Amino acid sequence: MRLFTRLLAAAVVLPLLTLAVHHPCFAQSTSASQNFDSVQTPSAANQRPLDKLELFALFAAGPVAPYAKQVIQKRGCTFAPDPAFLAAFPVAGFQEILKNIKPRTSQQPSPDRDAAYELLLPALEATHSRQFAVSDENYKKALKLAPDSATLHLAYGANFLLVPDGAKAEPEARRALELWPEYAEGHEILCLALMLQGKVAEAATEAREVLRVFPEHKPAKIQLAISLARNKQCDQAIPALRNALAVAPHFPGLHKFLGICQLQAKQADSAISELTIYTQEEPTDHEGHYFLGMALRLAGHEAEAASEFQRASPLKPPEVQ
Image (tube, rainbow, N blue to C red):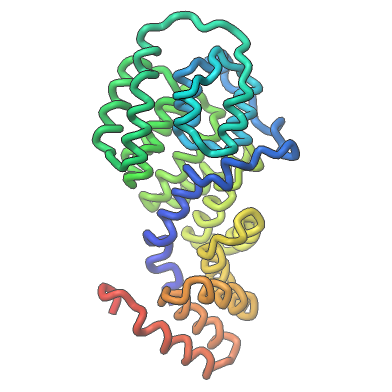
């Protein structure tokens, strides 16, 4: 029984990428109850205060807000966001952080970095309009002017995820991590790039790195769980999926993965429960009905299993008929 055939197809991958890179429900999570001290101290090269280029690119890469807040608290800034900067990041959680920045030091003039910064706003606007060729050109020009910016490399990598192109996102994320090894968002973008390429074992490693640096990183909990499930590590995937559901209870794909892992582990009743939830949320997914049928058959409910197989059959896309 090939339980993991075609898992994490576009219907699961792309919502996950959107959730992790730009979803406002994570960006707005700025509660004081978050464990901000769990962020590790950046390497010596990245302890300097964030200038306007680094700050803009930090947010352009789509961080979770609590992590961005802690980075700013630890490193400080040389720049208070102006109206144009603020308008680029309208999410409430980001606005709360940006409007409360108090510059700690003055910024040394740097014509190249200033010129790179001027390229970022049109790059972000082009991305929002899905004009990726335009944003790509702007990011390339900016990186020629500021090749040592970890956050700029990562923003460029995150841009590729929205194409989506994991193969192009991967080297930019790796370069960001060379410049800043303890950059939690760098590990997360690298995890997503690896997931898109089907490198799920490596992706799980990177998700664990995110959680080592910042244990409250909600998207990384989801990415770890799905990477483990795709790699058929069901003994580890089942608890990881439960942890992911605790932070994203309305993400139906997690119920599907959990149910399939439980099915492979011969936990029929639990699999039936999870896959029933999933098929109620996603009634047109033939795989959901098929795997629910398999779980029902495992539990000895042959008539109900046959009904699920009948539901699954007409829902199959043409390429799998």
